[in-house]
Image (cartoon, rainbow, N blue to C red; front, side, top):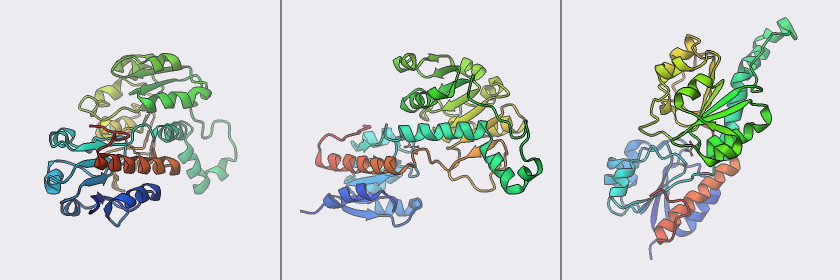
Length: 324
Ligand code: DGY
């Protein structure tokens, strides 16, 4: 009997996941470590039983039409799924697998790194070592002073597993108050000593704002001019969720006019950001290339879960993480 056909849109899928699939399926793998060009995706998805995609692949009606009726499973190697047209996928009865939860700790860890890098000016300080600034002052009482987390109010926007993990990771930093905004109060908030507040209150009260929500119609560009105007001038914002949650022109304006102090971004619009993009030239902005979950064990686990989702979907058994 012939094996089910699976299209994989990237070469560097961790081996453990690929080996699992290789045993049971016929794989066609895009041979490069960059996104599969759209025309290739449309060509190669045709007649496949399953598609293993990444958050860089937009899976919409056009792709589904190109795939044809054979496509039964889409498994994304990501927790986020804003790149998938779910209503179109659902209407065709295609099952969707994803990888929620696995990247939580790694992403929370990177959030802490961004909070420290922005508040303690780590990249600027490193620049001083390279550009000779350090040699001019040796050690000086106010030189390279930053603003610690101790005694601060940290506001978390979106209080799912990552938001909660960020609070947990920060418990040792002497933060005075944790507040959060989400659809409704959560018992985990109470357990962690974090207070549920309105969006307005979060904006006005926070010294640090951490964005960890999903990108939805409700959250798209919710951080706009009006929101930045409500924030403290000393506020630092960190986004590890999706770039689309922030209206980027508003952020650039807020940073350039010192409406807020700094930003640490792991996500932005577009990704990858062109090297001549205004945001890159903005000195009080630290940018990472979407590496929240880029940690060896995490990515291996994401790959094995994605493979398990595909195999279960194809064998019509329970998918370990089924989105729909
Ligand atoms: C996800 O899984 O959606 C993350 O953004 C990947 O880093």
